[in-house]
Amino acid sequence: MVPRATRPDLTFNVAQLLREDIGGRRNYEFAEPALELDGALVLRDVRGVVRLTRTASGVLADARAAGVVDLECIRCLAAVAESLSLAFRDEFHARVEVNTGMPLPPPDEDDPFFISENHMLDLGEAIREYALIAMPMRPLCKPECLGLCASCGVDRNVTPCTCQEHRGDDRFAALRALLDD
Image (cartoon, rainbow, N blue to C red; front, side):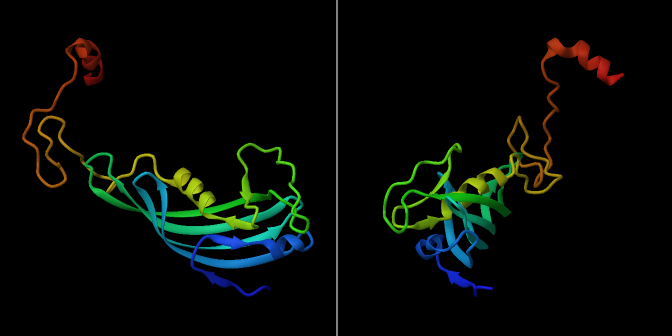
């Protein structure tokens, strides 16, 4: 077993691994204080492990990572610190042959990950993409969040609302009456 080295960032030099036979491996632990996901979204306190395995066309990254992203509750707009756990396996393809520097043909798959011409594998982009997929579509501050009042805007989790309940469009009164029965 290869000893794990702690990494301060998400970039790995895989030149030596690319010179090994198929199946050669390296294990790493990594930590990154912040990784920008999309605009103002930032994954904080990223920590994880990755096993890099030599393949015929590059390196297979088998990774587990965790971090925290700050979101807004969809009902009351309160800040929500959402913990994300990621586990993925993806192949990073070499652009150039490591011994000769000759360009390699592109892979057949759509939107592949690549190893740079300097033989650097950047795990950050893969973590970013998988984190965006793992984020909740409807983040809530708590499952029983009451949200904001549609009329006065008060946070109903903090203050009870005294507004009349909005009954909706009067054109649907006949349908509403069926539901009330």
